[in-house]
Length: 179
Image (tube, rainbow, N blue to C red):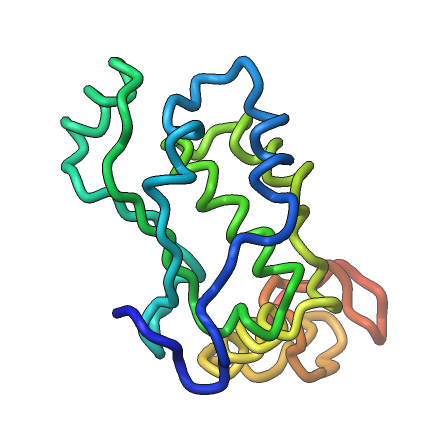
């Protein structure tokens, strides 16, 4: 699992200033592991072909993890593993790393506060600004059975460029109904 994947020259690193930004956002929050991450955290690449963008792994099971949170003792070894495709997309790398760093700090649930902190510290890039997100969208579009949309009113057909269903037909402007 460890190692440097093809196309990347080094192991992943914590983006500059991210620990401080996350620490400032977590002030007064229930993040008992944050102060221990300097000693306990390792960062690595996920294997080539992995579908997840990132993951956080604690060496202990979930019962022990919640016990350590409650007692505010060190979490033990924590590993953040990131997908190598992120090496070419700085904004998505920062966003994914911030998300995983919150988990490592002890915010284990995907709640509103978790999303709010990630959005503030490292907002998700727009689709047009992220080569990784564009490739993922293209892959999804290629795997969909319908390659085009056909208007149920006028019969106009056009190439499918989005995953979501259109609202209106580009030719007759009526509400979109498929045939």
